[in-house]
Length: 115
View 1 (cartoon, rainbow, N blue to C red):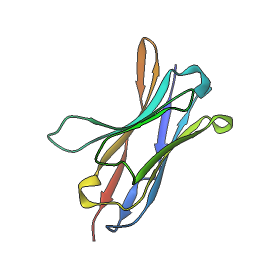
View 2 (view 1 turned 60 degrees about the horizontal axis):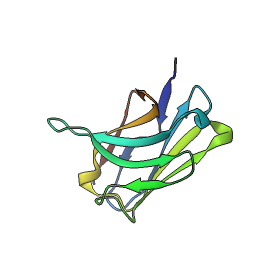
View 3 (view 1 turned 90 degrees about the vertical axis):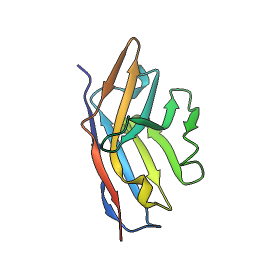
């Protein structure tokens, strides 16, 4: 059973930064890819960023140039560095991992951008 645990969310002012972490209960080398998604009330969960085992990354247009996804294989952890945060980045952020054919999700961490 794969478990993903997110941390690092919180309240930050517009223009500020946060780093989210997603710790996996197994080696992340096993996964085809990992990613971060976010969801606000009444809306569908949307992709924020993904990273493959070979290190290829992909970002939503809304976060390009502001967010960076990375991984630390030794710590079995994926990070999302979020800079220049905006109020519209407020959401619950979820980590996921693709181990075909299954997709695993973390429990989510709240990010609130407000003055």
